[in-house]
Length: 468
Image (cartoon, rainbow, N blue to C red):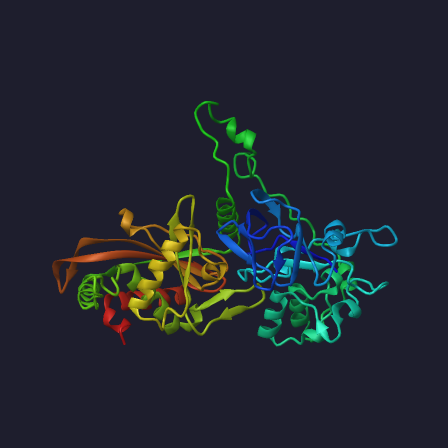
């Protein structure tokens, strides 16, 4: 049967993508693992691999097309031994015998439920008319054929993590394919079998959110484009269209401020001992034949390491909110904000508590270079428990940062500067850095947040503790 190639969801926030380039032509043979196309997401340009074999029968969306919705049909692959011209002519979804559209063309699954793992780099597919005649979507005959369970990679990953037996889960995706929400429903019900799709379909629809109240003064809660334009003279501004990254940043951080109750904790950290240790370590770095050192530590590298160790020393703070529970982690994952033109990335240093300062330093240099080239993979900037945002290089002394969901905190780091303090009853000049921790009050209470930021301050002021 012909195989429909769909626009994949390459990240949880992706709703549309730009089909930048086809790397295969019509008529080319396709093998599993071949790179079919380059897709531009809201964050990066990704190479997308084939997961089926056959021949590329027809390209339906030409390269250079922008804003292609996730799950839209973009190409057709002829299966092994199938007539290519017939597949190209008849591969698109057809009407069912009774004249009604097939289930998969009626309802498009959300990006998170598609046959793709975010960051996995695989195209989304659906086989056309492969269900046995008379089978209903979601029936056992469609869900499993010859002992094989049809499930999206994301559903398989969740099932493995949660210990859910896929063979006992009822699929609600196209042709009964098991998708992420089916596994989550099975887990939530406490059974290995998810509720039947019909039951889900009969569930009452969630009530529409109530309109936002107008703020004080009678002004509307949100202004339209024309209303905003009305405040300014027509020739006084230039309109800049929003790209995918800016839309995503606006959406996610607005939601973060509305949903996550923020509170802030500020400490001043003395840097004199850290700066001396940094100078010593950089001076001892091995050099290659060209005289280039193996590493060059920055103050930010120490900040990342200190935050990673602080999270493991205060394990209750090494957690994120998950609606009906808190997820507490065994290792520390620390995101680091990297500014690029038009936005930012937050690549994540995994197991920051275990890595050496030189490893963190070299990882961050690689991440920063690839972030500015928009070459980071989604799995490199997704997740994390906390983040570090450092504006010290711009001379900023103090600021507060917005938490990046699903993380539960973010550390805003200011510039180090000479200040006069009182030590042993006498004035002394020391180098001081101000850091402010934004906390999600659903996960961290005031005392717990204070414990975390105090652990961070202790490591910064006694940096030898990061070496042992």
